[in-house]
Length: 346
Image (cartoon, rainbow, N blue to C red; front, side, top):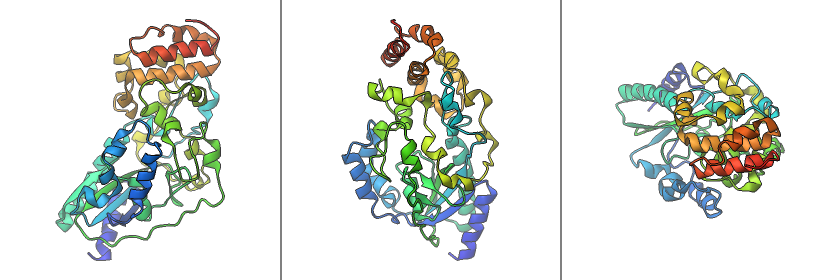
């Protein structure tokens, strides 16, 4: 295919709302299998057993769909309009990751990807498959190979044009498109993202131990969180934005174009007292259409109770104590811990 067609494809992607576009081959990252194997062998994946179970596909994008000749990587910004670190000082309030303060990005990005994909099929008569964090696709290494940026020391993708507040989506296609050049790493001597991590989740630059990552602990980890990590979680109840927020490259971050990524005011710094009282029905209603909903009421309230235990606010003790006999073991355990942290007995 000619470069002019690729330019038209890029224009269509930008027209649909994407801010970054790049192309790579499915086999553009030959070091992926070894990188993933080392990650799993170290146990850094924690309870995410699916990473090990589907390692063959995840480590080799060309095995996921052998007919694919090109991977179109697209970036969609969700840059916050407020300081996501400010809520950490409000200890009686909850910190919810920026990306989860409104609609679920999976749905929004995928619809946009499908529109671009349909145009591609209509114009070129090719076949496509689209993915948004819902298949064994290593999106960040592929995006780096496609020239969208580089994986920073916090392992997230960075861009000179977009900062690091953006989602990734991919279109695998049987069309043979000219690949873009990968961009070299440009973190230099900066260690801001490593230094700010509350739980020291980075064993070394460019390496993440998910078992210590607050995003993993609040979202993926089932059952009680290890006690030595609970106090380090502060008031973060869903995800963590610290390493993203301090990155100096965010001075180039572009404004989010999708209004449905704009934070719902009630989710910017909601009171812990209100959240801990949610039953399953109220939880589902409050987070309908939100990525928060997928962790369920029990894991969510568990996280809220850890935040209450870290709040230093004795007025929240009764709210925590009321859940000390909750049917969910992880909730009851967290409630007992929170009361103890606040200097009381259940």
